[in-house]
Image 1 (cartoon, rainbow, N blue to C red):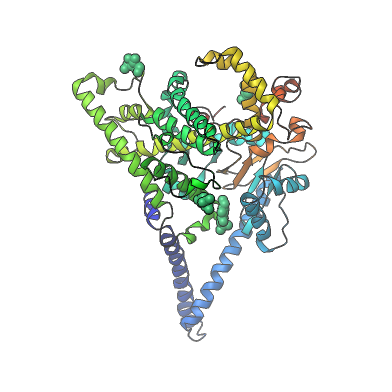
Image 2: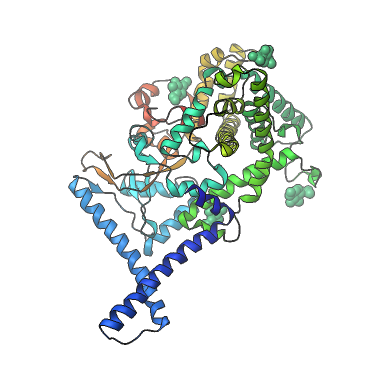
Length: 541
Ligand SMILES: *[C@@H]1O[C@H](CO)[C@@H](O)[C@H](O)[C@H]1NC(C)=O
Ligand SMILES: *[C@@H]1O[C@H](CO)[C@@H](O)[C@H](O)[C@H]1NC(C)=O
Ligand SMILES: *[C@@H]1O[C@H](CO)[C@@H](O)[C@H](O)[C@H]1NC(C)=O
Ligand SMILES: *[C@@H]1O[C@H](CO)[C@@H](O)[C@H](O)[C@H]1NC(C)=O
């Protein structure tokens, strides 16, 4: 499959069409054989023209698809009944194949507010349902119990799946976020030792970049301009994460910050530096690959002649490849100077970056991948870490600022706590952060209303049966190979789980009696999925 994926990366559409054409051709041969040999020879029904063959080929393809859908439906019904479970409620759309429902979900994702339209369906059908667009299963849920099953207790039965991997391949490559099963475990074993506490709390490094970001912000504000805070956080997190992960900083904060679109001096003053080109390409590629998602398995049809992500990914890889090569060289020199290194190279040095570490552990003995490809494995791995670590942090920091601007009381209380605990000039320590309860309440409350992964999808491998959310109902049947979209975003805003004020921003809820009332009983109503957790926790988290 990997090789097919590499081919697809060149021209996804042609490969897709070739596969379909091949199937069609096979069917045509079958039809022809039946027509010429069986009907014509043995039954002497007369001969058939090619047009007739074509006609019957189309009919058989359509019939085959319908038959497949029907057989699967019947099988699921039977299997569910034999397990004492019920089939999931299916959304009833007005159009054939629930096309109107698919369009509504697409519109919601594009123009609406997350969950807008799904709320209505939930009110009608309950916290788990099947949209069955184009007769394919697509299950939605916002139930903490089911989310816990997908991410923890039944982790091995829920994978990203082939469709996901195929869609993401041109950007995520062979990195951890595009891996399932054994491969995922391999990645986890590979990177896990690096993310020890000390590494994650390398405050000095983050502080350096934060200082610069604040400086830039101040200068611009003092000059009387507004600042795009999201852009600023995007730069800060990119610089910090590249510095942290591979010891080479992208320096996007060194560039001029963009001006507001209405600002007079905005015309073409900013020259594109290498780092801002990288930033742009990096964001573009992620956006393009996200867009593929709403076309499901048909996405290659929009990329017939070229892989749309190829160009931005080239920029990204041109940036990363030399960094990886340099790290490999450095390591080679080191082990030449000190032969002990190559044997005991598995130790993590105090100042080692993830890149250094990966180079060390993969030095010589590489599992699973051929030696020639291991620079690619390393590059994809650090790229995956970057995508995951950066976006989530930049998003959360931006949302926190958004809330602090909307709620001046929260702002002043938070400021008081920080000044009281850390003061004006000192750097915070791990202990400080642990003791700043209000700060952590503000962060939790922000992550509740804007979780870093609002929606995500997994696909079941085997069919399974889950207890019903509604205790008066029989358990629900989850078919095999069915994609399930689970929404932490919607779960975090449920009034039945969080109380009547669930949609309000109120950090107090993490400190007052509401903790006991709602959270202590059922900790799974709050799902923090951070990148390190995807790596470290997941099973049993
Ligand atoms: C600022 O830039 C935007 C696009 O980048 C442009 O549409 C707008 O007209 C510019 N404003 C001025 C005042 O030049
Ligand atoms: C897919 O979704 C994106 C938003 O993520 C939207 O911009 C795009 O138009 C959608 N494409 C199709 C074909 O619906
Ligand atoms: C790590 O870096 C710090 C500060 O840059 C330095 O003082 C220390 O000696 C370095 N440690 C090692 C093992 O190189
Ligand atoms: C924030 O949420 C975590 C659970 O992820 C919890 O352990 C922690 O106590 C919460 N912090 C506060 C201040 O409530």
